[in-house]
Every structure is written in structure tokens, then in C-alpha cells.
Length: 142
Image (cartoon, rainbow, N blue to C red):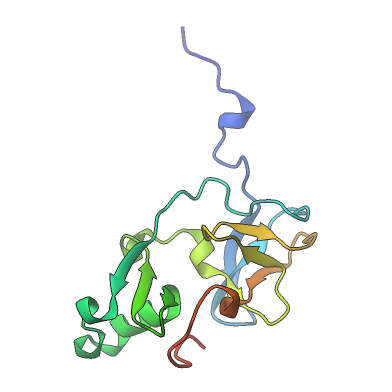
């Protein structure tokens, strides 16, 4: 006998957002339903950061397009010496596509889990203030 699937086992459970074209920059993350203040935005995102030293990455020797992946998607710490990266850039989850705002509606905790800073309406773009958790060596993230 086949076990009946519970509603809580559906792929859409806990999903608040999706990627769509953004007026801020390229693509962004948009609410597909109202999100209450304090909600964890990407509840099933358990991907761990891989921390790499800039010297080990040899960024200066890489093609511009590859360097841009590191500068635009990694969390940069210690004055540009350490990069928090996805395990592989092909495995980036929706959380990696939040665009920057000086007045964000999303923020992250010390473990880089994102939460709604206020109630977010369906259709709104989710944004984060990159400077609250990232140290940029230059303006290449823009």
C-alpha cells in the first residue's frame, strides 16, 4: 500500500518567492505570496558556504567572467582575503539572487539564513543590504 503524501511534504511548502526579471539589476527574488515579518525566507536552503582564501583562488589569473562570479555572489570577509562561496556556482539557490537595497526588506543572521525584516507583500522584490554581512574590496558587485 502506497503511503499517502501529506501536505507538508509538497515541494511548495515554505516557499515564499521565485526569481523574476528585476528593475534593480538583472534578475531578483520576488514574493509569490504575502510574507509575515520574521519569516525565514528560504526554509529548506541548507547549503553550506565553502570558505576560500583569495590567494588559493588566484583570482587575478582568472578570466573576468569567473572573477565576477566571486565578486558578485560570494560573501567577502577580512578585507577581501576570504570568500564564502557556494559549493559550486551551478548549485546556487534562490537566496543567492537577492539584490541590494539601502532599505532592505530581508536580512540575515550570523549563519546567513535570511528572514523578513517586515511584512512583505506578494509581488514585492526581496532585497538585502549587502553591507550588513559582506565586505567589498571594490564596487564590482554593482
